[in-house]
Image (cartoon, rainbow, N blue to C red; front, side):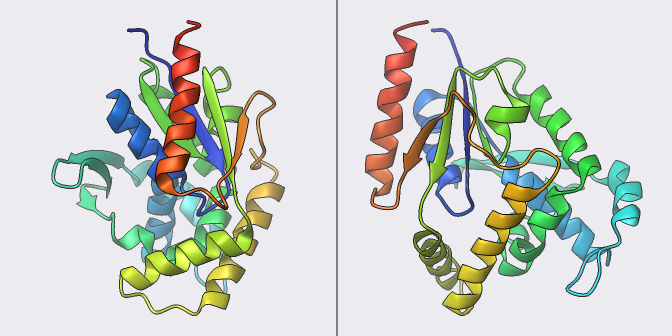
Length: 230
């Protein structure tokens, strides 16, 4: 059966990764979480003191980029690939609210985007891939056969993120999570290099009132219909 490229873009905490993982598992495709890649670079920058609440040493980060090695290693117990930074599993470390506070600023850096987009395009050369992020359908894979753009209200997304953090034992006030979601929306949508936007041929899904199963079924129907035409 012919394989396709599925590009899933959208705002933070819209469940892009969850949907992408479900689709990849069902279709037997490769799943790539590009958000994890940007989070890993952000974690690297934080660990090396390049970025904090007071300052951002962009030039030092750019100079250090050649020493940043990112890899996905499949974890059979979890059923998905985890993020490794320079040979170390950082899957848990990159999912904190602290990393979330800086990741959009790191993603604004053109040199970071160039490095990661090149890697992402190499990963998808053979098709049979599901990739989620902010610029997959517009920059990474503009010729993807299926493009999805996911959205939901800021309050709905903040609640999802808040619940996720609470489940992980990270006691963060809801209003702080909501502020972070809104700030990331603004930065992602207004950056000069590859801003978050819906591709002209993308199908928009507002999942404010959809559960995971309903969302998955709706997108799987789109995949099935598309596969009949190619």
